[in-house]
Length: 89
Image 1 (tube, one colour):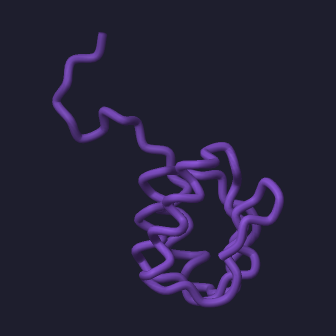
Image 2 (image 1 turned 90 degrees about the vertical axis):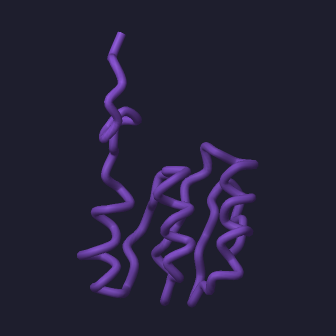
């Protein structure tokens, strides 16, 4: 994983140890997109970071499982109140 200008680029396989790096990069640069076009295997911890921080993802992963099963979950925009019984004002 590298910071390439104003893009966080995931390159090759990324293990659980890189989740903290991704979180730090995205917290410091919340408007930077994440390029996943050069990614290989990505540990679920990184996907969890992406689901929480919701960066804009660019590129397409080479892994068909990630494209078909993970990407729809990560790119779905869920309202903050979904699943909560809070009154809307």
